[in-house]
Image (cartoon, rainbow, N blue to C red):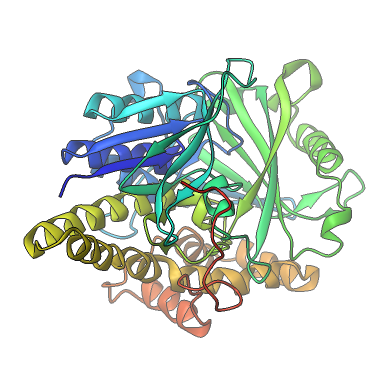
Length: 452
């Protein structure tokens, strides 16, 4: 059995999957709508779990090459701050994080995929999946675009034995297959901007658990300041749709007010208009398997397209890369099983599909409990009284904050007998895990409107 995999999207999920699959000898085509380097809305922070995925991939991250290591998290709330080091977590997870702009990070990932042998088509937008008469996904419909984003020629199809949807929150592939965002899962939104600032070289990833205005009243959401080591700091905020009056909140004005508060907090930060670099940008954060199922005949969903953003912290890069590694392993095993099975083309295809069924099962095992607890957490933080109490208790106990960091970052060692790991595991058992194998109605997604 030969295999041509078409990957929609060349971000962390798509480029990582492409690298693994190309190294395994498969024909891989990555279809990326923009051109590298391209700007993405993100905090630019990489958790220790994401660094582990970089290590698995063999992605170098020397400080001499522009990477900045972070020692841990600095929490700010109620006029106080508390630091929690990344050291001493799970034995297979690095004791540090990293920061790098997504423009640089994604370009490096795409370059690795190309060097591994993948074809990377930049400036090509996937408009949806192509299906055969049985409903199986057999390719994608693509529109070439100019550097200015205008259409260049007529749309065309790219045939594939397997389509990997790594095309982000909007996911044209998933949408064309009737796999739509679920209303029973949390959704976040974020905005960020860059400032020239000495905070660029801070070894701590700063998280504001509360966003006070200049009168001392609390605004909704959480904030971050991540130095990216190039003279600028990424300053942003996020909010979950569980917050009161979510749709009425003006994120732009909230960000502006909070930045002024931070500048008053420490005038040396340089968060003033003349130091702003670029414009404020925003994005949605699809959380806790907000699109299901993650597998249909001929296609798999990865990363943001599958809703693999943590409700705890809005982080999605680690899960995107992890889902890509899992998918690549499953695909390789499925091909081997299909070749071993032999028989008619239909029998080989059936064996291949049976092997691919492991992908959603493994994603469920890796993230279901964490996202289940995160879903409960999302509703709790939407209650101001609960949040104020939790912040007051946490800021007074470094031991409690270490538990919080383990839980929020999915950094617990599930084989460890340590008390802190057992506490995190107990918290995850309290909430039912979220599931990723059915649509909200329990029915199969509808067929695509894009035909072969």
